[in-house]
Image (tube, rainbow, N blue to C red; front, top):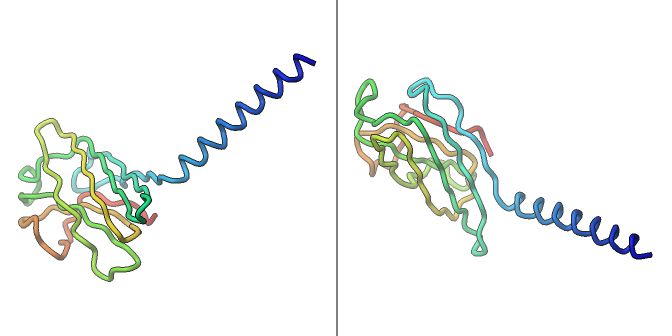
Length: 141
């Protein structure tokens, strides 16, 4: 009888852990950037998580992203854009500051559910329309 109780407890523990891990992983969506023709060495991913206020927390991390001044033609800024079903025009959600260490992190919050995230190289970080100079982009979420 004692081994049955122990076995039941062990099975219950593992089932509970599995259910909890599935619950937490379903709250957050992580997607990798596609390979870049502009900066071929750049790699990164985006995590999107809905918070209790129905906003979307967006975190991205990029490695091997060259400084924008080293691009051809040279640019001054990297700008992160969000495409959503609510907005016809992509939203400028912020600027990535390149470092000589070639590794950057970026966080932002949006009330719009992201459909696609992409990064462009721009001369003006406050631009309201993305250029065609797309450095990294995700598939549709």
